[in-house]
Length: 235
Image 1 (spheres, rainbow, N blue to C red):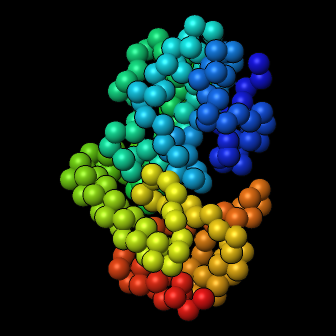
Image 2 (cartoon, rainbow, N blue to C red):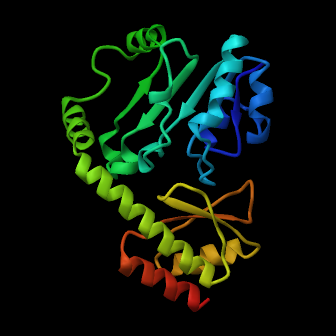
């Protein structure tokens, strides 16, 4: 079978693997082998698949000479999402992590891959001698070593996301997603809501493939949340 992605998800995933499958068919698709690309947590809907739920998928892919490629760009936001500690070197899984999402340092342009040794060697050979800068390595190493900051920030994100959900619900909007960095709302009023929030200086993400969808980042602090509340109240 062709390589395929689990959608809806990133536009870049579709560009690389145009064939699309649904999350509900993931286990059945694994029985056919091939390569499956999954974002976990997903973007834009924040859908989350636990490591336990992915284990039978991985087993089926192994039995059928397939591969699971998991984009874990947002996985640092939650402590029990990452798949790496559940894998062996023989598992047909390739993980990608992005440094910029959780740490808020997208400009560092840092990420990494976890995969079986043979895959790692092939990718390292293709990347060449200087794929990332020494500065990026130093920043990333220091950030991942700061466990206190990581634990505190994770807890703060969950608290802020809960307050955000409450504000949305107060205005008749139900948030979807388990990723505490953003929420997806589904509403027939998405276009006018996008424009109204934009006029208030609050940028959101609309989607051409579903005009009822709008993704909002979780407000950074109480002042930003209050500004959102005011913008929603005066719509």
